[in-house]
Length: 122
Image (cartoon, rainbow, N blue to C red; front, top):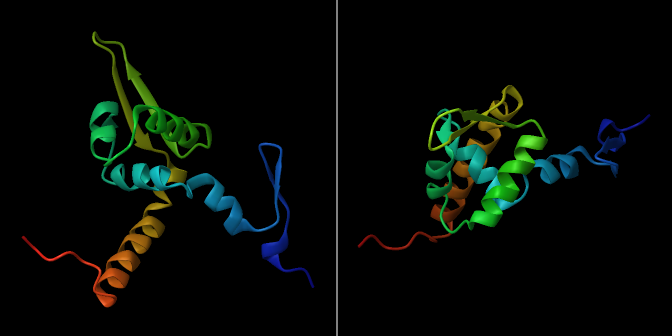
């Protein structure tokens, strides 16, 4: 009997034999997950989205947001105004990741609390 997790996934000319490895390719880098997290409440202008993510360079923001866009998780809308207005929002596929991202956030909070990793309040 074949394990459903060992089925071969082919995406962008790469083979994945584990669906989790495939998901991590889509959202596994730090900034892609954070972009999804910050878009959970709705669309944001490009500059506001980038400012909401600590320590992300222009280059890394562009790389991450374009990757999410190409993978169909984020939609980019350009408004024909001067100066140009660009807004990003999650697609339905992107929105389906929100419960997973929120669960990971909660797990991180619980782990930090359990292991006394929070810095003292100032």
